[in-house]
Image 1 (cartoon, one colour):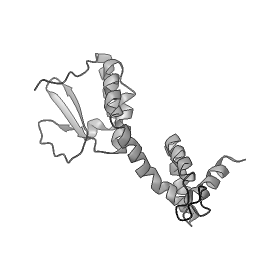
Image 2 (spheres, one colour):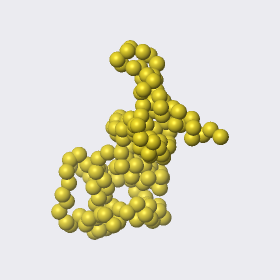
Image 3 (spheres, rainbow, N blue to C red):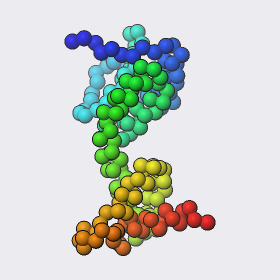
Image 4 (cartoon, rainbow, N blue to C red):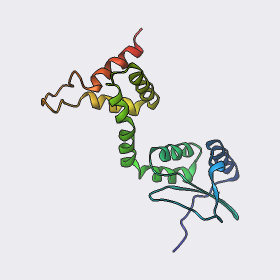
Length: 171
């Protein structure tokens, strides 16, 4: 089987990438390729190779993996950037699903009876930015399934969340 055509990078770009990986903790978590890899499935494996040295890290599977790849993409250019865009693009449907799985529980917590739970959920949603805002807007448009009502139900968590988000930005 032929080797894949890995994009070539120059020494300056390699230094930028290594600096990013060091700052991201890759060099602390990576294992030497000469050691036995113990990987579960599914997973994404990050490999850095230079002459005889090869380092690997199992990035796992899920939104944190994509966030790591997004961070690495920011320091790539040329063909390496294009290849990373293609790779990350293949995860677009999974990214959407993983974002919903991460954010949906926070949206439900906006309907909690305890103020501390609601405020913690609000802060986490704010930190997740536009993705959380988009999913929150979609939640507000969901009908009350019991009543067939096309408007959000009064007791639906999204109803309360709209008030919390409005209060945050009001003078």
